[in-house]
Length: 179
Image (cartoon, rainbow, N blue to C red):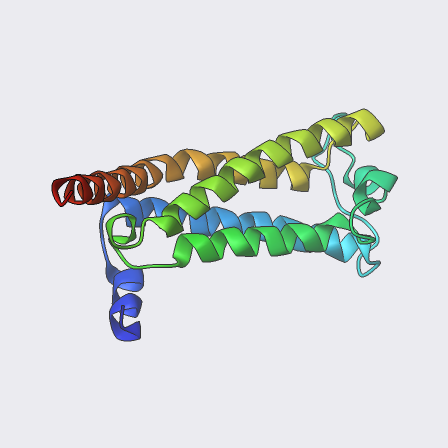
């Protein structure tokens, strides 16, 4: 696709899949913003992350300073969240208005990533609670972003899968008719 056409389709194109993709992009930016806030705390740029008043379930400072939060890749987990949500946003933004039919592998890749993100987020929430007996509300907002994005992606992913299966069926039929 020509860059000019891609620009026009992404900015002005309208169909249900694009509406959902825009929501996924927005949720990805929100999830990434949560990772940015956590990163600011985990690297000492800010000294405190506020929690909702009156809640005993949340203690962002304790969770985000715990061993759990620094146990992967010799790094705090905040920057990893930022990169992860940036990748999801990129996959949601890639391709034009009808990418499920023109390039079905992109929405399928996005769908697979969102399934993995949702499973990993649930496991990380379990670990967060197990180690700290508290949650980081910023991380849990990001978890909700992942799960909501997965739900939003389903229709386009199903269209992409049907497109691939349709192409395979046509190719298989063409191959068998030539034998």
